[in-house]
Image (cartoon, rainbow, N blue to C red; front, side):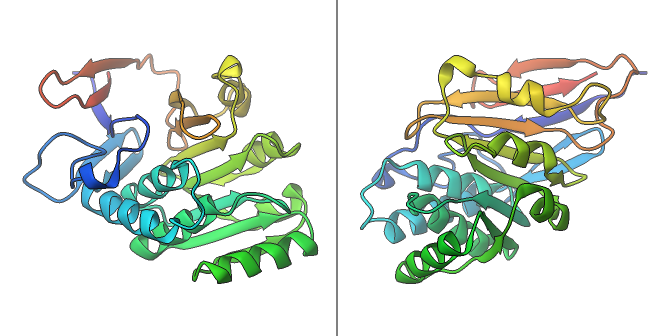
Length: 255
């Protein structure tokens, strides 16, 4: 008898207007239980539509003054909905701050950690000041990816900016959670869709990119879901995609 593992992704689309938001906005299926459980081989994550919706609404309220594209609300909902325990982002001087505020909001709903990696002290000072003005905080780590990422073990939600020259290094060096992780690349180019993620997983690695998608949110958002360690083996397993015609949920079944 073959082993069957299933994981279900929330609906991937641009953020919806706050006045139309409901507890099932990011996952249409109605559940009897609060959490939807998602499992792959050695991966067990829980998607909470309620937590995602609360983070979305709180981020909308926190980011009103920024008048940006809405990507902050979407990323915040994703981080909170997946109950991320170690959220890591990269930021450089002069960058937009709304996404960082959204991640801080998500952290308040998951009771995890939110760490921002910056290249130098000037960036650290500006980031801390602007986050303080927004009424939120985050852990700030200064340094090169090689030294900084070494100390961040168990990352399950990572946000990088493709405009930073070191963003691919950050992705490759990240010590992801054994349960898997969600990776996002802001300001992504749709023409290079998938290239980032294919280069991320080295040949022979126990990791695999379960699914990736480019979303026309903000200036482009590339997203990938990475399997648990040991999830990519040579046992002949394969993924089968199934779309629930009633709920619209996308299921990936591992056989």
